[in-house]
Image (tube, one colour):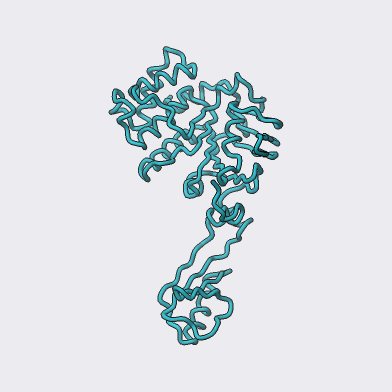
Length: 318
């Protein structure tokens, strides 16, 4: 039995379809309402993305689940049991901040966090060896963390937060500030956990990460869940499956072209297509009949970013 499988076998929580359940969570601060009735479920073995603009309530929600902040109202359950001090040991918390001791080595950091999380002394070495292998740091166990690159620190940061092998992991921006190769390796690591039954709740501003790696996506804004579903479900329910068409011309048309929005600066026409195969050929034929030469055609499918901006707006939030 390998280390990852052993992780779940050791859990005392009975298997269940729903790993984490949050119902009607509310939390207010002096400056206003941070959570306003948030409700959702995280299924066993699911990778769920939690998206939202700055100030939407994501961090407050994670803090309530982890027990760092007490919610004013609502229910939080882990595998059907109310979350409390005892069963929160089955939660793993990976903060956005690097929570490592810079002057300790990789091995020493893992040993410290293993003891903090109550890993039995007889199992510490086994867990540390697994973590070093899992994070691709097996060749750097004796190096101080302050000598590591940003990606190496991020990987070790994740390992440190799950030394007790939790069945549910909360990850707050685990790939912030890392290069594409390190980001990809981090998601490979997380996928190994998920395949062995671990449930992952990921908060991120990287929409591409959520779109590519997560099974389901929740968008939260102003303390409320405003969308919940797979990528395709969110697109279909929000923007539909229409394609955005952009055509760049050799010159400006002498008259308005019906059905298009004209951008004079770059001689571009924009419109929306219901069916590319059916609608595009007659449009190009029409432009040709007007004596216009098409220099470039760009067809874009709707994306998670399209959905996110439509639901939350384009204004910057600090």
